[in-house]
Image (cartoon, rainbow, N blue to C red; front, top):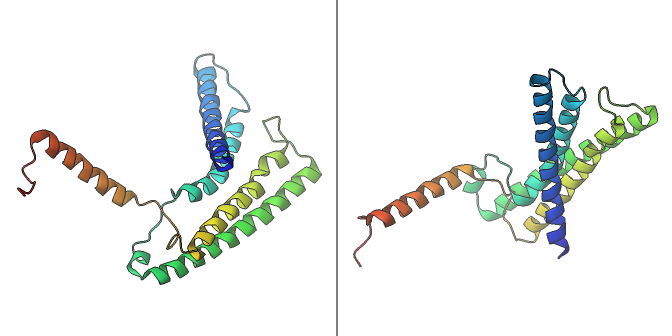
Length: 190
């Protein structure tokens, strides 16, 4: 129940960020080319929203296994070694999360102390930069979950999206559908 609510909130927040970016960019284009005007803060705000989308989306990508990577060599190793390599990758990711969270927090604190406002947008910079420690902490949480699943034996390594395998599977499914509709001469006669 709680995980379903959290999933919906994550997906909804990502969709909201993407919709806000798209709407704001569209409104600015219409204002510029139709009304010969423009929204002065639109570009800067869109960049802020994009940064939030990226940093928030990193953890969501780990959660659903959608990050791409090259793991052809790793897949050649036995499962035990794949687990060790996966834990090394998780540890490196956690170190990165530590740096981005620590550096992000220092940036937030510095901008909060200076009380700086964004150049064009009516928002305080510390609010904009808050996504750095939040995004780093969320990514660390998701990486820790992956590490725990590897240690518990529920997964052999760091799960990556396999776009090549998906493309091959889609081609195979299309061929099967085509053969089913045309009578398929490749079937065995058993």
